[in-house]
Length: 125
Image (cartoon, rainbow, N blue to C red; front, side):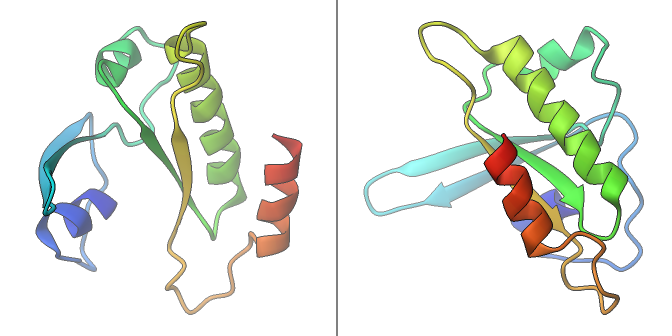
């Protein structure tokens, strides 16, 4: 998982998908300050439930991840971003900053989603 790679610097070919929610903590040590990242991997759980508000609570930013080899995950990522905007936007702060992250770019198979597709998506949003 991306969280495992970021927090522990490890990658496993035998990773099992997250069931429920996975929490992790990563501290980035910088000369001027330490940055504490609390990561919540909600693994594509149902957006319509009330629990997503709990998972989103106190978020300062979001990573929305999709699989480059599967179109449906990109559509799902768009829906997650809409859910974030719906539940976390405010007149005072605007929308929660979010980064769209492509996963599985290292696979030898050609991805189904191209850079051109992503550029087109970015211009639409």
